[in-house]
Amino acid sequence: MADLGDLLAADGVTVCNSPSLEKRLTELRAMYEPYVATLSDLLLMDIPDWLPRPGTKDSWKTAAGTHTH
Image 1 (spheres, rainbow, N blue to C red):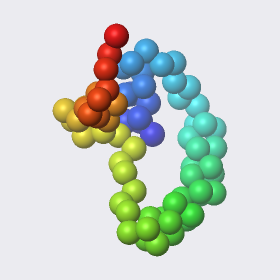
Image 2 (spheres, rainbow, N blue to C red; image 1 turned 90 degrees about the horizontal axis):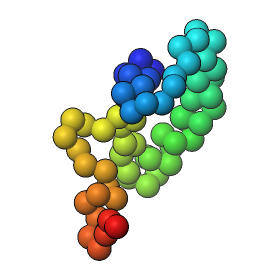
Image 3 (tube, helix red, strand yellow; image 1 turned 90 degrees about the vertical axis):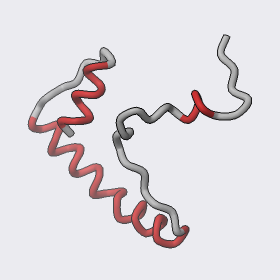
């Protein structure tokens, strides 16, 4: 969570650093992660990382036909 919080804070998002928040996020992840892992196995698809790799562009910035105004 610390890395994600640092990334969000760097983009100007106010992040709560409460121990109870960390516990709640862990509880929420436990509710959906088994289903995501099962779907990943059934569909033969890797689960993407939470954080982008350094130097990775957002897909909307690299998609063909994407225009900025």
